[in-house]
Amino acid sequence: MITLSDKQAEILHIIKDTTLTHEQTMMALAKAAENTLDYPDVPADFYDLQEKGVICDMGEGHAPYAPRYILPDYEKFFAQGSKFLRLDPPKDLYEAVSDLLILYHHVPSVTHFPVYIGRIDKLLDPFITDEAAAKPIIKNFLRQIDRTVTDSFCHGNIGPEDTRAGRIILECERELQDSTPNLTLLYNPEKTSDEFAVLCTETALDCAKPSFAYDPQFASEFPTPYGIASCYNGLPIGGGAYTLTRLMLNKLVETAASKQDFFERALPHAVETMCRFMDQKIRFLVEETPFFSCNFLVKEGLLQRDRFNGLFGMVGMNECVNALMKLEGREDRFGYSAQADDLGLAILQAIDEQVKAHKNPYCEYWNGSFILHAQVGLADDQNVTPGTRIPIGEELPLYEHMRQAGKFHKFFPSGTGDIFPFDMTSAGNPEAVLDVIKGGFKVGMRYISTYSSDSDVIRITGYLVKRSDIEALEQGHQVVNDTVVLGMGAKKNCHVYERKVRSL
Image 1 (cartoon, rainbow, N blue to C red):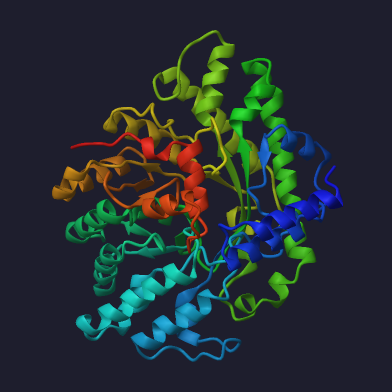
Image 2 (image 1 turned 90 degrees about the vertical axis):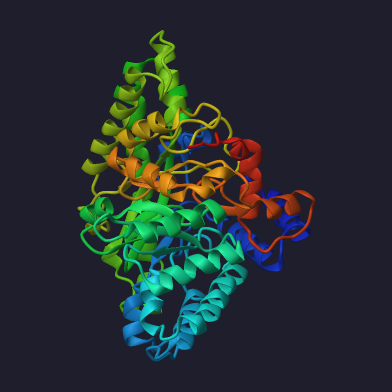
């Protein structure tokens, strides 16, 4: 039982933390205040599974008052302006970037910052009349995002087509070497030229962005236009995700006496409890908070309530499979045995079927069901592997690794991916790296990230952080970007600096 004195001690600790900026202190205090409330009518079994570490609410707080992830329709914003913000449709590039920066300030999320800033090349390209004059405007636009949206879960998209704005954005990102915004190329072999894809690959090797999403797969799954937000989450534009909760398979397996017990009791019980927990969070957000009735983003048609969905997340497939194999008296390991991989697929199939069978009245967009998400982990995770990845330090040879990952990506329309750092010499042969990425898509992967071993900006799990910022924070200095503390934790607990570096 948390007492008032416990809560007061927590608040005082936040106030006295010398590594927090004023804004970071304010947000931490707001979360502490929210969490003095109880969860909204959650199932009784939830607390037992939460205490055992089986279900994790991803730090959303006990009383969510805005959706976790929001993807405004920025194209509609440009077409109509905003009555609430007293903005007319932009007429030139200056007005376009200014209007976007104004709107970003008013887009909430679980981080209190926008997790999606639009298909920024498509938004800006129509306003470019002189590329030389446009570059400093776009560069300052990107710089301001990094300095004011101080959270690396902020995500922009480019492509699939080659645009002048897209090329300028890539050039500016290489010069800026900033961690925000994250970027994804929506790669489509029918629309993305090799020339533009190579430029994206060169930039990724230099500053860890953009990542590569396989556009044909995402576009075939989503009934409306989609965007990649936050870490690598595919979500509908004009909507988003009410909530993301994760199932810790590594902890769940510890509650099972046998493989049969896992499949017949432990897994179905945990999935059902987590679904009912998510139901109550969504119900509270939709029915008891004013977001969908009062927020100007909804009133002006930039968001539609029926384009939001719940994300059913999971981590720890590697640990779960290996533990079940041991219960069967076998030493097979995830990624190193067809039997182990088949077991992982069977676990996912069971989760997928049960989640699809569970219906939520406010998830119309996905036929009333939650969408599966391979969650990338938290900074304080220990001995748990993100999503369905192979652990750092146990990576397979590159092409075997991609084939193995491709078996699992199809289950996760709203987020999964793998990361492949390359040695610094690969920067001299971006065409070959691009061929590797194309090969990954051919064997079923939907999202691939890369960076160079000597890059200052690196991918932690699904977000970016500068190594130099981690070093500054470790020395007790304040840093602008609040996700650096997550990167520091991931360096210590998840060993992200120790990923296998690939060579061509």
